[in-house]
Amino acid sequence: MKKTFIITIAALFVLGIIGGAAYAWRGGGPGYGGYACPYYSSTVDPQKAQKFYTDTLPLRQKQLQLRAELAQLYGQPNPDWNAITKKHQEMVQLRTEIQKKAQEYGLPYGRGMMMQKYHRGW
Image (cartoon, rainbow, N blue to C red; front, side, top):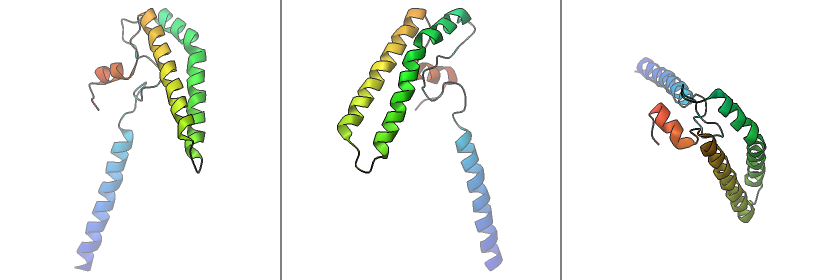
């Protein structure tokens, strides 16, 4: 009885590790997380894409800065929810600006495009 119990626990432990590794692997790939990066297919002009990246570099840097500031605000013992809301609004404005630029260049951009590419839904 004791031996079967130990074997069962060991089997569950191994299954848990395999399941955790499989779950951690999910979502790997460029742009899957919805960051400032359009996905490219064979129809996208690489020169347009490079120009887009060059033109949006300050916006993407500002976006990274805002993420760091948000992390600091969330990490405080008593978070200032008004400041957090303002930072989120700034993030939305930046994302909208980047999406508009991508549209001007004729590039697919955004999380919705990622989901279409990978045929995954949330």
